Image (cartoon, rainbow, N blue to C red):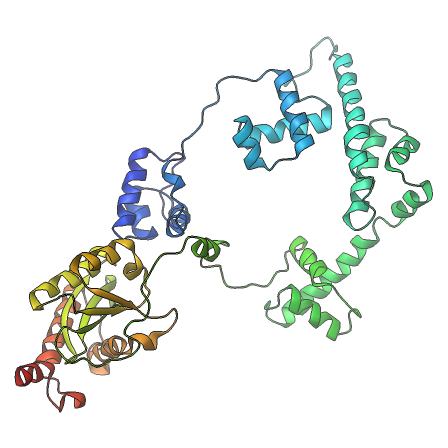
Length: 452
């Protein structure tokens, strides 16, 4: 994780962040360059990738004026009656969520929105009348708002809410008969619930212990649904609802130790709602061409050095399997892939050229797509999760690695410059000297010279 942690991000940092994002850099590089936390940078980039750029326009609010008590009461009572979400309430009343939450909590517990803070007075006169007024307000609030809303809840968590609310009413001095009258609940039912209040907790403790043993037995690999089926099969119960298992697993921290989520929860939903218009698989695995620069394939690969990973972008001509352009860099960026394509102008890149790639973020980026349109090139892309659609490029990278640094006698730690020279020498040999069966046992350059 980056060591930069700032409480406030300036407009200058936001502009620099967006500029680097448009250039194709990702969270690790941007967080260090701009000076923000890496996890924060990842969340911002996820929102950018899904089409949400509201972070650039967000501003810090400063609240200098205090609202009078009458206005606070009006806002809280209106919130209780309409029950809006916190986001809607913040937008409507223009106060922070934390402030609105505190007002509502004070009103619920004490009958007022603002409470006086400070130590009690030395003479002992701690305004008992105000305290009694607060208790009276809370009693009225429970009798008019809390209990009537619980009146029709008779199952599940409704019982717990009723018992908890009645307990609060008893503390405030409200008679039990008055509470049951408002709830329209018979005394026998209430006392039955009260006697068996802890039965579910006891059952949950037993279930939690069974889940713990099952997780230890199965390498903490079972989620709620599989755990429910497993416990039934083991004879713990005749039937078991996976929702109850999910709740108990959450309360006792017994969830499976699953892989971390790569993207935010609603990432793919947002991508679906904000689709990016991308070309399809125009090449359709037809890896033959009738003339030079008619069909090109491109991709990026990782190369190991003792200074860390470096990145190589290359373009291969399907006509004679020649590497017609490549570039090696320390960072994966849009400039790298756009530069590799731009170098093809000297070789006759034109409107009849088709260039195929996978769906990596550099090739789906709007800047790269627009660059190909400006060059007049037709773009083609592999289907998601289908490496065979770009098999020729993958095959070349496999040969490059297996015939150079992956060989036993050549295994060593390369610096950036050494790896650069190694790849440069290999591509020169691959294009000019390495014979291929598909080319009649000629090298790509010899085949080009013979045909043209």
